[in-house]
Image 1 (cartoon, rainbow, N blue to C red):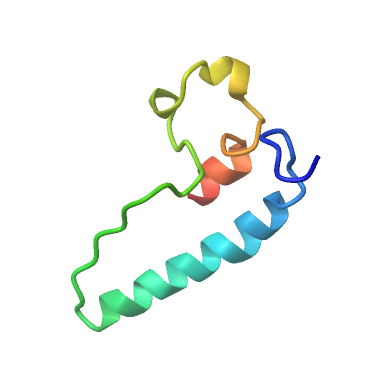
Image 2 (tube, rainbow, N blue to C red):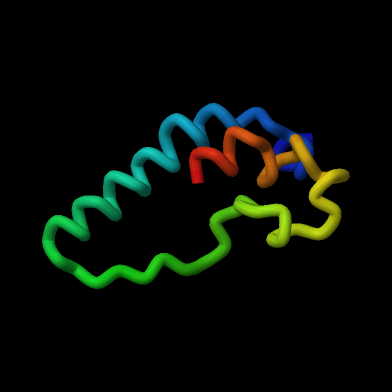
Length: 71
């Protein structure tokens, strides 16, 4: 089933393209001295405290080592 929480088919895109593009965009805003607040559901739990049952969720979509490191 595509887009299920266990589907990691888009992990490479997320880490290698989407996160990179977002960071580049934020950097450009910073260069123009624009105040920025990044808010919203970015579909990643960055720290263990950000998710229920971090041990049981390790490696699942939104909580992989790659996503946490890229974020």
